[in-house]
Structures are given as C-alpha cells and as structure tokens.
Image (cartoon, rainbow, N blue to C red; front, side, top):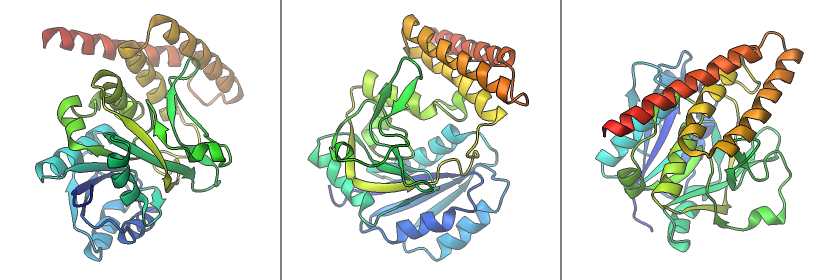
Length: 304
C-alpha cells in the first residue's frame, strides 16, 4: 500500500513535556508520505508554541489548527480527521502525542492493511515508563466495559501473533478513509473516555470493518501524561457518565448489570480509602447523567 497519503491527527492538551519525543519519532519514520495535523484544544501549557517551533524544523508538512476551546478529545480528533479527508488523505493515523515509536512503526501498519486485508490496524503498545505491555488486542467484558489483553504484563511469545480484534484504543490506530465515510465521526458528547470505544464498536460491529493487531509494529505510550497518571475526581466523573452512555447504547441488560455491580463496588471501596474522591452517591448521579445522554441520543435517532 505504498504511495498512500497518511494524515496523522494528534490533539494537544498538556502535551508540552512529550512533544519533542513525538516529533522526533515522526522525523525518523521510513514512511514519508505523511501530513501531521496538530489540533490545539486551547491547552493551558506551552503545547501550541512548542508545536509551532518543532513544526518549523520538521522534515514533514504540519498543519496546526487552533480549536479555540477545549471541546474534548473527540471533537479535536474530528476536526483533524475532517481536515485530513478534505485534503485527500487515503489513511488517517490517530496518534496520541505522548507516544514514541520505532522508525518502521507506521510502514509496518501500512503494509499490514494489505497483508491482512483489513481496514484498521494497531501496533503492540508498551507502557513507556514501566516497560510492561499497555495494549495488544482487546474486547468487551462483564466486569469492565472493555479490556486490553496483556495490560501491565511482561511481553511474551503469545503477544507476537498478529490477528483480528474487536477492540483496541485509538491512541495509535491507522484507519482507511472509507471507515469514516461509512461509520461517521466520533461522538463528541463523550468529551473524553469511551469516545474511541463507541467509534470502534460502530465501525467493527455495526459496519463490519476489520480491525487487526500487528505486533511487529511497536510504540511506547507515556500513559496519563495529559490527564494525570493517577485517578482523579474528573476521571471518575467522566468514566462513570460515559460508561452509562456507552453501555446503554450497545450492551444487553445482563452485561450492564455485571459491569455496574463491579464498578460501583470498586468506587465504594475506593472512596472509603480516599474520602476526597466523589462519594458513591455522586457516582450514581454521574451514571444518571449518562442515562440522560442515552435517552437524548435515542430520541435523536428516532427523529432521523
């Protein structure tokens, strides 16, 4: 699939500390037909200024777009995706800028689209700080909405086997333009967390696109750089609200019951140990907010 133009979309938010490594990785890539689209979500740090400086010295074309507001990662990605497609890109690489990667990481993914006759493809992802696996393949579970195979484990031969998967995060995912043309964009109601889960569900389970895992391509993820590596009241709020929205859109009642029983037990025990975090009652309120989002979505679907 050589000769295909790739639009690399990355969203800035508290990214100042990681941008040099990200740009350096792109500079070393052996796949040259790329355009980087940097979407600034009004980052409060020096991300925008650093991006401009690095772009001025880059060996690849860079388009910097100021969103003017922090509309969330989903909206930032959508801005970049739409611009890449309008510019005639054949493929879109959604890439967190807290990722560093080997020189052949992108070309191996491009080759994999042909090799496996798939429409979307992801690499083997390590945690940059621990050296443990961060994600390989994944799926949907009965204690958590999604799971990542190999997470927090040492690498092993079984993770070196390429194959199809129904889920993987979009932190470094190469996608054919046809996927967006049929599936649509990311649901901006999520703001952050579960926005990529929703998109992958629609693309794979509803539209029938094929998602593959290519372990020969390797990236290293500095997980938690933008949102913080530790749990926070904000992550609890967004995860609880968005979990309710996502699961009610797609999961059967018994799966929702299992996930909720596990999640609320976890939150209850966590808030006993950490009194400064939102109480279980607040988390129930967050969940109800997600249910309201689902009802509004359902009504909108009826009108279309």
